[in-house]
Amino acid sequence: MEKNGLPSKVASSGSSHKNQEVLMDHIQYNSKMFNRKNLAENEIVNKKGFLDWINVSGLTDASKIKKIGDIFDLHHLVLDDIVSVKQRPKIEEYDSYLFCILKMIYYKKQKLKMEQISIVLGKDYVISFQENEGDVFDDIRDRIKNEKNKIRKNGADYLMYSLMDSIIDNYFLVLETIGEKIEKIEDVLLIRPTPDTLSQIHSLKRSLIYLRKSVWPLREVINKILRDENKLIKKETKVYYRDLYDHTIQVIDTIESYRDMAAGMLDIYLSSLSNKMNEVMKVLTIIATIFIPLTFLAGVYGMNFKYMPELNNQYSYPVIWGIMILVAVIMVYYFRRKKWI
Image (tube, rainbow, N blue to C red; front, side):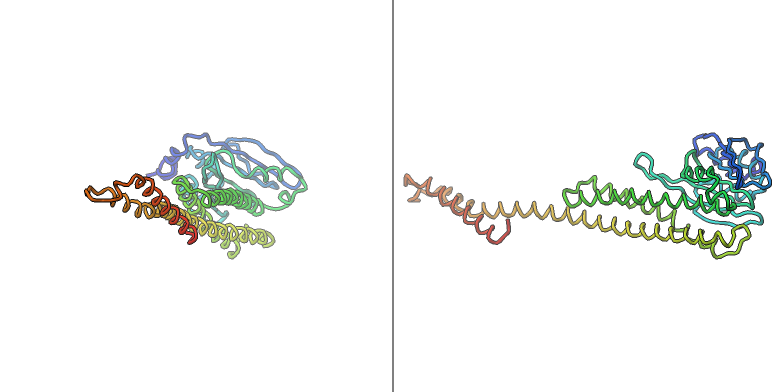
């Protein structure tokens, strides 16, 4: 079944995006001219001699997404992937365009958030689709305004590289935040770990697994761009994608290092709890050991025998107290010499 020319699954998928309005930011430029405006899907015009970047925010209205797809002759499977935001990073090649999916990751209110970014690269246009308004592309918009910037003198393939580079650079900021969290947790582990510390470690491990699943496939995406010959990616631009590949490997290596550290912190937490328990048991054992001879003395003189000569002596009570205190002091001294306490 299809609805509005899209598979029914696609047409209904917008319900998961809280009915956010679909917004289109259109930037049109060449080496000498720059123009930016918000527009509707029926106002899209791909002028000759200009490069178009259309950034679509919000995926709730499948009919609008289909109209954009009709203008640029996008396959219905591409439109399906755009609005189905559970996709893994990938790249697909079509006759007149490339279709790429990445994950934009950022922190919001101390929680790790992930958003799917879909990019369509054509001969003289780039279309980016994102789930919500707000992204990591502000620096690119500022660079495009600058007539002397390199991005104004290169083609659509360089613009797609710039978008991917901004997304991957933001991974480093996310990893920096995670690194700071790891340092804080390590400090707590060394001083006084609590059940809340264990919760933080598990949350950290989930975030790292989340990151790894999003970044790992990206390596293959960029590797495919470098390996395959495609008329839309110029040979002189591939050097930038090679640098992008290196950054991706760095991100993956950092994630793997942090995962090892998180696993180590869990071991440290369990060891700290075990050591803490051992200290408690040690103190209780020492107290019990000190009281064993004292209990013995108290037990002997607590027996109700009639003929116990010490009971009739007027100094028996202070003497037995003195003996008990002396025994306790000697035992504490002995324990200290052995460095048990």
